[in-house]
Image (cartoon, rainbow, N blue to C red; front, side, top):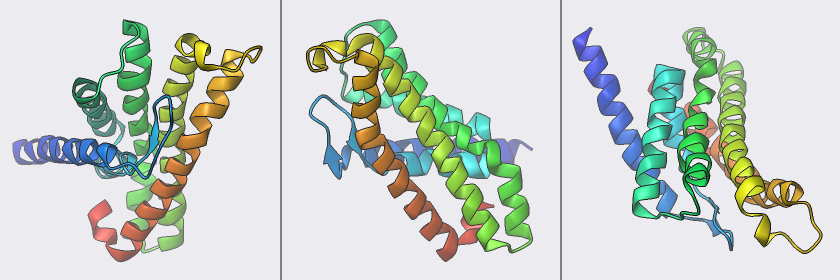
Length: 184
């Protein structure tokens, strides 16, 4: 039991660090913040292996470390939504853990790919939701004159989070096809 718990803690730490590194390796960066990265992959990987709680803890650690290393601070609530809340919600992809493990035991690769994709979309939507709230509440000044700040936040955040989700799904499916045992 203790060995298993230690293993989960070690994996959370390692994959959180990997997610922070991936967050720095941007494929596309938005002008007012946000980028297309592979940072969701390690968080979701932990969530698939160990469930929602471990995934959310990994996401929270990533959010905290990302804020420490590259802070953008307007007020405490903005920091909460943009960093802590958004990254923590990525761990919700772990809601599909038991079904994924069952599909892998039965060698139903297509079902496993669907579940990995659903988890990535759910976790990515969590990331989007946190950023959307921060944008609507705090970044309205960036919206074009006369545009609703919530519509601006929706469009702005979707412009980078949707491609990030698609990239995450592709990478996770490739990993699943190449090495399904990693997800068990």
